[in-house]
Image 1: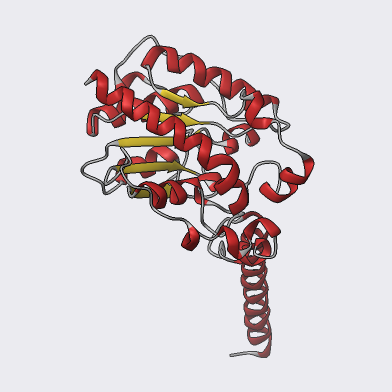
Image 2 (image 1 turned 60 degrees about the vertical axis):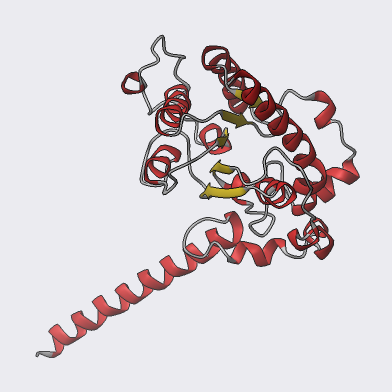
Length: 275
């Protein structure tokens, strides 16, 4: 091989190595900063020093209650980073509710994903592939990612047919998830929202969800419009939230779980009465 060709080969190798190193470092950064990608666990190291993630809020210290209506129920929690617990070391209200009530939690949560059906990790794509033959409740997050990424809202459909929904819109995706759950498992469906934060887009999504609730008679845990729930001190907010969207373990355990658990139990009791 001539010196010119050898020199060119070396340059190609150097460029390829530099690109590879850059990509690895970039994925490490986004994993550390935003809990996304192959290095998602690095984010746990970032948030582990927060007071709200101290040992006293660990799942190990949560006791199981006797006589819960949720005992042994198979509950799917579908969502993104808030359901996963990207700022709480992977522990959320879903895990606390599971432990407190002795129910079987299927937590299908991937950070950075959307309701709108775009890509293999969207809510709908993952729901279709979910290995669960007998779900008795689906609890779905109204994803903040759709608001951040400015996904199209869409409109509530006149149809109840799963084939008629435009899943490339928020409205169509939400309706598809409801229809899919009812067709596959014939189970109740609850959607939940984030508490209030600075996002007009998310506020519009919450309004849309409440319109969808009227059509489908689903449950909605509307933390966004719950003035009493949002009325916490700045000291509590510092303990409970890692940022404006993502709670710490303390936030889930002391703030979110009591409210969500109460709603879910009441919802399931009324569902049983109507059946």
